Length: 226
Image 1 (cartoon, rainbow, N blue to C red):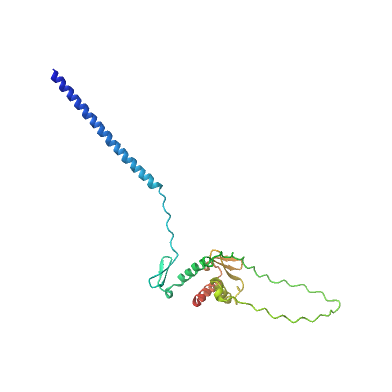
Image 2: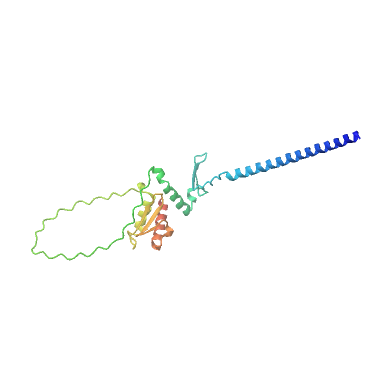
């Protein structure tokens, strides 16, 4: 009877020991699983909180020298192989970019754009002067002074816009738009096209067909002599 009681106690002890070990292992596994889930959640939160760097803007104009000190140009992502192979559109784009770089070269802000030219007002007819009661003695007129010489601005000191505007005025001299069209430079390097009181910022925006054709002809003539 004593031996049977001892056997029962040993069996109960072994069962309790195995049960305790099983509970401990299950708790350990669940703790590891919870720890892994917490680590994954922290990684996801960290990835969401990372600031995304803004994209680098595309380069409009890039210049570099090769081993032979030859100038290489890249315009809007396209490499320009030789000056003689530039298309008219690329030449206009390059002129526009160089004009925008002028404030950096000159080291000072560009002047503000002038107001639009005033429309020509026809002179009013003066009222007839009353006849004098008696003839007055008119003193002799002084000899006319020598005309003041007009100093023209050399082409080298003129900006690109001023040179094109000078050609444009010559082309429009014999048209109804003579003296009504002016080119002005913007502060940021752009171009204002004034047709009377109308303002345009690009040649394609000009509504007057004759003025648009003259603008394109003036640009083409400047490119031939540039």
